Image 1 (cartoon, one colour):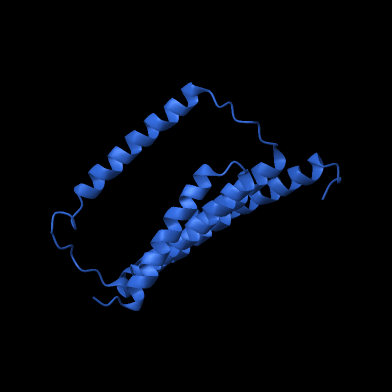
Image 2 (tube, one colour; image 1 turned 135 degrees about the horizontal axis):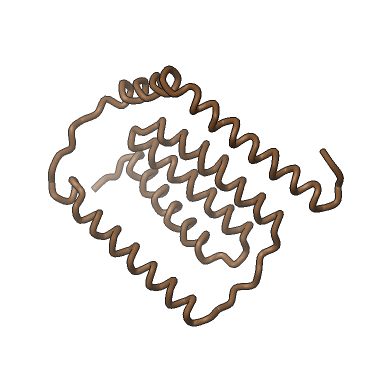
Length: 171
């Protein structure tokens, strides 16, 4: 049984995604957890790209790596973390929520089309991406620009707060 190059890359990205997600959850250091989250998001974007979803891959990098991880890092810089309580009730609540989410994911995976041997309708990825790009640029220009300006304002506000909290004066 010979594996193709794309299957090896897909398997490697899947392993990196799961390993970095576990590292993000298990890390006690918030900066390392955010870095693991960033690695997970980048490898997930690679998986999207291999699945012919280039637009979703670019969106994953722009939103999660560019926005979410940077905001997490700014939050970590602004507010020092508190020590975890380590109470048994906190651990029990975490295990219960993990079990519920895992059960929901297993149910979703079992009920997907590939598990039921149903073939999905083929999609033309080039036509699909151009249709979505055209819709974003023609129909949703104002909301797209509003979101971009909101993100820029949030980053500028976080930078301003970080500089004034450390006593470095105004920007």
